[in-house]
Image 1 (tube, helix red, strand yellow):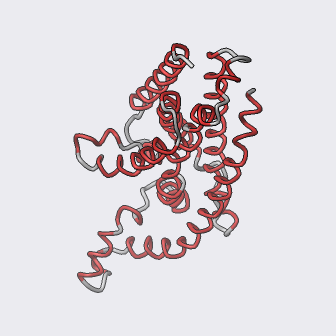
Image 2: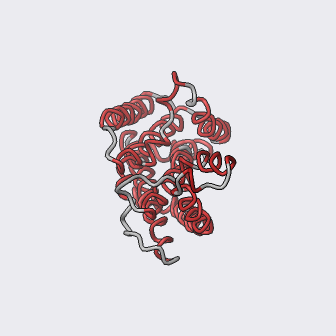
Length: 261
């Protein structure tokens, strides 16, 4: 059953890998301009020709200021790949992998047939593990796609130079996947939860600009930038996400085992 579930997900896996490859090429088109921004920002204020240039340098500080001890190429991958292009796709991927797992069986009217052959516990466990392992595999491929593109375009970068963010990406991906898997168990259809899920993925970063909701924004955590800079510890946040993931899975299992079909 596990391999059957993986086989059903292979098309989605291939599509995401192709999307990441295309995104990495788009990112590399921005690299020469990024290098110019870094050079411009590195100039002192006295070297800038006008006040407007000083304002420009200040406005691009977040993306062009390379921290001390970090190479320019590594910082580019951290901010423009893990922090933006690839990193922002992880919650959406988790949604797409998780939501159809049980909902699809309900809509196809095949759940009762499946229940006659496999225990409820095995159904939930196998589907959860198949979907999650597929997501984590794509996250791994996506993590190295950015550095791979850098090397293909002649910017020497360690192929596994983005692995500092892999743990965060894995934990955050597991958390979001577990939440949407729970919704898949509860819901009787795919379309409405899918639409609401996409809205939530978009809305959460917007809401989190307010200080009282800042903990909802997992995108900074996904980028792994704090880990790269060794700035503070994210172990508590990591532990909380893992606990919530486990609780979501156990709740999914409990609801499914008690549900009448």
